Structures are given as structure tokens and as C-alpha cells.
Length: 108
Length: 151
Image (cartoon, rainbow over all chains, first blue to last red; front, side):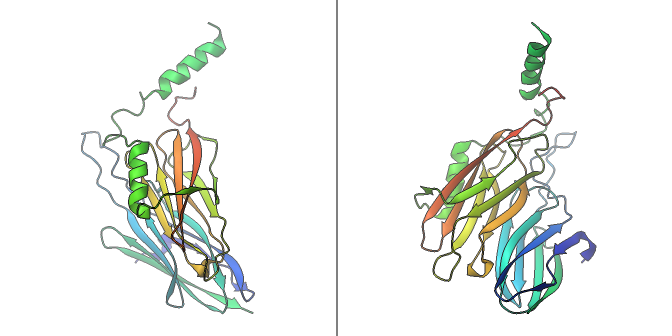
């Protein structure tokens, strides 16, 4: 679903056992449920609740976002790679929407 | 009153809520709510100090996007690793910010993200270790946004 909203940066190659940095960003307003419209009604919450990173089907990192996370959630973290594989990134929204992207890495 | 003093007074007045009132829906949470929320997240284990490094800007005028980097001193081996990192903001309308779940596959317990801080406040970070202990760290950021240029 609309993959152009998703930005992922993973190095193309790495050495065996190297700890690599993964950077991700999703374009999403992340409405906090704190704001009011001019007529006084509260703007309803619209958040990306969960982010998960899988390496060859095994979950290596998970994040749970709440109102205090900024819009367009950016996230960077580290992963140790022992063999080449395929990263899969999944963002799950509160309203049941999903965004995903894949990236592969070669390990020498 | 010279010009410098006038500017100061103007800043205090502008920062004291006039641009913010009416925009925020629910009542403000306090440090007590943040503490309660952290206890819920970590299962009520008594936290210890240390092992957490937090990088926050000292002063920023963009409370909507405050970059934060949290790193926890840990070997991240199979037997000793960081299980989870929780971030809580003390003076936002609701204290929850985000939680991150890590494992030995990460190799390094460090994350960077961006958070919302509606006003100058303390950000509390708790790290859950694989042996069940909990460490606590604090960072502080001054938010000058909405001060009308003189804050």
C-alpha cells in the first residue's frame, strides 16, 4: 500500500558479524489526539501504533509508538548481520492500515 | 527598565501559556502520571540509576520534532542484553511517547527517533535488562517555540 511513503536506508554490503545501522522513516501525520479544531472538537487520534523489523522472517526489532512520537516517525537502530538476508519493515496503523518495505543485504 | 529587561519580561509573558491555551485538549499530565505509566510498563520493578545516555537538544524552538538518541551500556550478548527501552515525557498531555523492544540480534543498544515535547520538560527513559533489572535515565530540553520571537 503506497510504498512511496516509506523510506529505508540499509547498507548494500557488510562484513560477517558487523553491526549495521538501519534508518527508517514513514510519512504519516501521527495525529496525537491532543489538538482541537477551531470549533472545539478534538482531532481524533491517528497513529502508527507498531513498527517491526524482520530479518529473514525473524523479528529483530519492534517499536510501539504513542501520542508523544513526532509526525513522520523516524527511527534508527542497529542490527548485527551474520549472513546475507532480506529485511522486511512493517508499520501497522491504528485503523488497520499497513505499510511495508523490503531491503536485502549481502554479507561477505 | 532598560531594553534588555523589557525583552525578558516580554518573553516570560509570552511563554506563560498565552499561545498554548485553547489548543491543548486534555488536562496536562504531571511527573506523577509519568512515574505511574513507567511502573506499568516495567512491571513495578524498582529502578536503578545509570547505564543510560540520553542526547537531547538543550534548547529548541521546534517542540514538534525533538531529536532524541538513547544508548544503553550493555554487551548485547545472548545472556546479557537490553530487552526494552521506554520513553516517557513528564509534561505532555499524555505521558506515553514510545517503547522499543530489542534483543541480542541488535548488537548495540542504541536508538534515535523524534518526539513531541509541548513545553520545557524532563524526558524519562527506562531500560529493561534481560535479567529483570530496570535502569532509569533523565534528559531535559528547553522548548522556546511559540514565544513570539522573544523567548
